[in-house]
Every structure is written in C-alpha cells, then in structure tokens.
Image 1 (cartoon, rainbow, N blue to C red):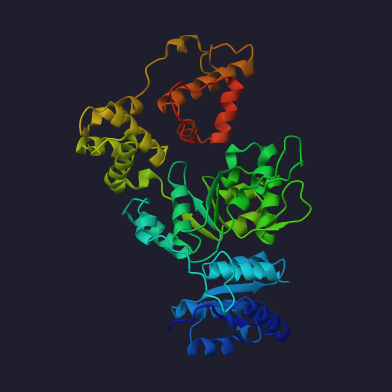
Image 2: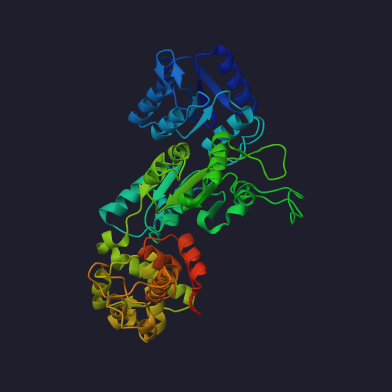
Length: 484
C-alpha cells in the first residue's frame, strides 16, 4: 500500500491535543488524519498508507507500543513517533527498542514536534506549504556503499551488517561496543549514511582526548566574552552535528559531571552554550562507542545509570580481529588497496599465503588498526608486488624480546619475602616507577610506539597511557605516528 507524501496519522485519546497536533501539522503543509484509539488507528491504516504515525503511549484500548507491534508485524513502512509521559525514560527506551523512529515527552514542545516529524520524513526542515512544491527527500547512501568498509563475511560480521541496516531506520541511540581498533567508527558512519540523515553532517568526537576543563565548551559551544580568550561566538559539537549524527567515541571516559550535562541535552534536545542565557534546540542523533563494560562502570559508580539506559537502547558488538580469522584475506586486500592508493602505488600489492598464515597466528591486541600498521610497514619495506611473511616483521614481535642493554641496571623483581635473599628496595616508589617505566617502554617498542595498541595490550585506555607516560617521562619515538 503506497503512502501519500506528507500524509500523517495522529493517535491520541484527548480531543484537545489531537486538535493542537493537527493544526500544527496542517500549517506546515502536511495532510493529517486523527484517531482516538488503537483500533480506530488500525482501521485507518488498513484503508490507506501514511508517511508516519504519531501516537500517544497510553490509549483507551491499549498502548502505542501495541500499535508499533502491529506495524512491525504487518511489514508497514510508516515511521512511528511515540509521545511518552514526562520523566519516563523507561517508556522512551521501550518505544525505541520496539521500533519507534523517535519519541517526544509531554508537555510537547511544538517546535521540537515539527522538527522530529520533518526528520522522520527525511528532511532537515518542515515541508513548504501546499501551494509550493515540496523539497525533495535527501538522497541516502546505497547500502552496499555504506557497508563495504565493514569488510567480512563471518557470521559475526553478517550480524553487524544486519543490525546496522535495522537501526539506521530510526532515531534510536546506538552503543557500539568493541575493543580498541576494531572499527567502531566505521559502524557509526554506516548507521549515519544509511539513515535519512545521510546527507547531514557526521561529527566524530573522542571523549577521552579532550581535557576535562574544555569539555563543556567543546560540546556545547560558547558566546563571546564567556571566559578569558572567548573573543567570538563558537559552535560546539552538538550545533555542528545539527540534522546529522554525533559520534561519541570512548563515551566511558567522560567524567561524571559531564555525563550529567550530556544526559540533560539528550532529554531536552537543547544545549545552552557557555555565556548564553537561553537554550538552543538541536536535532541530532547520538551514536556512542566504548571498549569498556559500561554495566560494570555503572556498578562501580563511574558511569551514570540513567545515561547508560539512554545510550544503550540498541547495542552493536564489533568483534575483535582474533574472532574473524576467516576474514583476514578480505580485510588485508581492502587495507592494501587503500594504503596503496594513499601512497600512490599502482597496482596494489597482494599478500602471500605464508604471510596470511603468519597473520592468522598473531593475537592482534590492537585489532584492525594494528593490522593496518603492519601492512603499511610491510608495503614500505617490500620490494615487490607480493608481501611476503618476512616483510611483516612479526617474527620479532611474537618472539621473546632479547635483553635490553639497560636491564642489568634495573632493580631485580621482588621475590617472596619469607625465603628470598633479595634485599628490600630503599625507595619503594622509585623502584615501582622504574619497573612501570620499563614495562611501558617495552610495550611501546613492541607496538612501534603506537600508544593506543600498546595501552590496549595492557588493559589501559589511551588517556591512562598518556598519563603514565607523562608522569614517568616516557616519550614516543621520533618518526612514529599514533593513529589515535
């Protein structure tokens, strides 16, 4: 059943609210039908199709979730927008998990109401009045083009592809979980490109790389004169992502104070720049990512439970590379093609079977990012069109390291005190610092001074790695680039 363009169905049991919603939408150029119950709405849906359905959560003969379930079971194409009671995050999360495109809370802000409806129909702004021609829908990236960067044909990757295709249809917040270097940002970009926001901006933010004192200004922007050095107005990440997607990488690294501010923005859909007296509405979809177990972080008191529920509406797990060994040939081919293109090398080199077998036996704590660094180095050192096992340099990486020249001067490891003749250190802190510094240096050398991969191999985030390096005076080697 085809739906008429800009045709909407409003479902609410309160006549005054139905009239208010109808008048608001008619003035914006929409064709509106109304219903007061689930059965009345379903009867209208059986008669004809609509572009979207806007339904209250509580209805006389059921709930808005029941209507969503019927739409899903019937394979209907209508986008669904659910209106929930104020202060009911559980209802909003349940609606999004049930397939709703977006939700609104009572009392409904009409400006926000118009923006959400326009977004559901794939527009950044409401349609023109009926007398004028309606602006065209945004062009969405073809599914194959959006997903081709997520290389892999294993079952875990097929599940990722399927989830991306499903969640792209709604505004539901998405949490991408996976180890460092698995490609979480690629998932976020695919969700964005496949959605109706694909023509809008995609703003990626590494939450662990911003100093805590600058977080609020970077996220929400500021007005001229808000603080010393604020010589002009500046947009924040939320304003820059208007009508698009904001990707919050390593969301688990946000301090608690900033988590509280972020929760309010998500709930109110408005930001207040530093130095401003009024809030600015924002129409932004949130996709976040983390390598942490946020459930454990909540239990430990390091992450807000209410924010966790808001962000973790739909979770996509990005599998580590060690679980995707059959995908290695495809991933290597795709990475070599891109690396060769960036380096101006044509044609792209291939990789030998021996090299692939060597890679398959490597643990890859740095995941795809580590593999990319290995191939980039191999391409630079290889003299032919085929990358051989010797070009990878994994023999040295996987084997025990030879003694370092300065290891003889390092303090001996602490043995059990009861039966050990090893003397106790005179300065325990200095002793522990020297041991930690030696471990950091060896980890950095093993991973060619990639701080992200070195830290991940020891269970440290990039922020923790930077802190320890600064405290112990460890510097990265010259000539090595850190992709983070």
